[in-house]
Amino acid sequence: MAYQDVMLHIGGKWRAAQGGKTIDIINPATEEVIGKLAHASQADLDEALEHAAKGFDQWRKVSPYERAKIMRKAAALLRERLDSVAVLLTTEQGKPLAEAKAELNGAVDVIEWFAEEGRRAYGRVIPPRLPGVYQLSLREPVGVVAGFTPWNFPVNQAVRKISAALAAGCAFILKGPEETPASCAELVRAYVDAGVPAGVVQLVFGIPAEISEYLIPHPVVRKISFTGSTAVGKHLASLAGKYMKRATMELGGHAPALVFNDANLDNAVNILAANKFRNAGQVCIAPTRFLIQEDVYEPFLDKFIAKCKAVKVGNGLEEGTTMGPLANDRRLRAMDEFVSDAVGKGAKLRTGGKRSGNKGYFYEPTVLTDVTPEMRAMNEEPFGPVALFMPFKSYDEAIAEANRLQYGLASYAYTHDTGRATALAGDIESGLIGINHHGLAVPETPFGGIKDSGYGSEGGAEGLEPYLITKFVSQASL
Ligand code: NAD
Image (cartoon, rainbow, N blue to C red):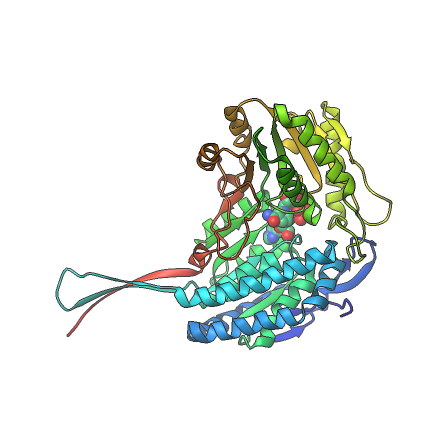
């Protein structure tokens, strides 16, 4: 499938924006313009809102059993198209083709999970105080949802939101990622081609702030769901609060990875290095602060640097590439700024630390040691292939550093001591904890952060909850 211009999907039709405005889409590996993206106007949003209201009215009346059939068909279509959609994803986002395929396989899995989970949106029957009275707690879809998803996983960030919403009986207006729109549009196409009625899933692109500021206050929209940076998340959450809209916020992270002296070092280094450089580090749950117990610090660091040197940076479409370019030039500039700030404040650059080549947004896998809390990278989410190394002496010292930041998304720990593993699970302040392995983002388990990393969950039975309201009915027989 060749890369093509990307359209809006409104009221069951793929179409250009009213007024015909477009923006360029760039391949991050070559910096070439690969297509044009339709850029929604306010008139387009009004139309989408009108169709969403009608779509919701129709979809809420479709039984969860029938919804599940359509959703499973969408999953089958996406699976059928997986190889060609993966090429689009790599071309616009940069990640190696194998990672693009893994993302799409994951998306199929998410759709199938929520298709079934929608059939389990159970209510309750509550024992009454009077004979002949039935007290029912019913679960109903919240209504029209507006979702805002980013460019790092153009399909997977969107599929969790859309699938949970549709399984619950909601209609969804997605503002997709402008820099990586084609693969996200293919996800929507799978749903549309599977037979979701017009207005139930719609897709718009444009200026993010203009779209969110128009959709969130609009009375048709009952809930929002956002994935992206903490700064933007706080802004959207305050807008949602002002207009009394429900909100799910999946925001940034700065994951600590604690490695104790009794850990299996090879296991720890293999898993942590693979997850540091997956998607060139542009992953909200990527390990970032490597806190290593001092007696294994040097051997762990040596093994990790060897892993960095083995990473093959290149165009994600080329065979053998294990890390693609950063997704946009903002990340390239950000990496340079983080590294020069850290080095200026005394950090040692052990490997990497610069752009790779002069075409495409490639950056070398980077390790900084001797880092301190004064450095920007130790406080802001690097969102790139930069690993920060710090030795620690005691358990308490490691926990204090792990919990120092306002982020609380993911954390990792490696130890052989089961007592310590249990204590860690209680002491670390984060929504997700991987102990002795990674395993944090499968459809059947909860996914979400605490503190400044947001609220709400996008996986497991908890993932359906935000799309349901509770209605209590007390009914007496005549
Ligand atoms: P950004 O903070 O401006 O944008 C982040 C995402 O939010 C983008 O998808 C963008 O389109 C969207 N966005 C921005 N302003 C918005 C608004 N007013 N309304 C609705 N959506 C809005 O900057 P960026 O350069 O794209 O990313 C920078 C940082 O964002 C990264 O360093 C990382 O910390 C974070 N980020 C996190 C995730 C994640 O998975 N949690 C994904 C992408 C980016």
